[in-house]
Length: 149
Image (cartoon, rainbow, N blue to C red):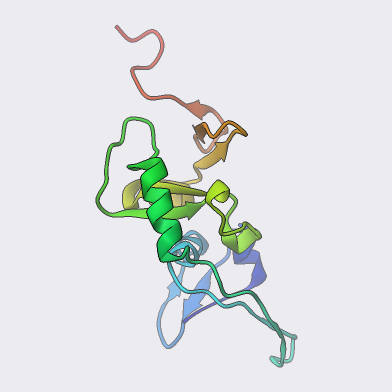
């Protein structure tokens, strides 16, 4: 169990706590949110429960088959990894994203970590094309940098 304030879900640089364990960074908590069964419990300042959030973050088995069929491999440009791939919510589930094929992308564990712990982002166009962006908002394209011979 990971306990975190709502600030962690909103991307604020805040820490979370593993139950009966250590403190972890907010980016690590966000990555765990993407890979774990998650149930949000809203608490009042006195600790009493105010509400329980949605539970269906993980894609079903049939949805994973469709995702693997559609994406085939990690969708990071130039990465053809087919093993150790995971479904990633383009609009993060922890931030209100849906568990629908249009909001999911197949990524390897390395590139999944880029998004959650190193500030990269992903968008999908209406046509289904995927674009990756570096932490500063510059679009990433595979291949040599301009001006490099």
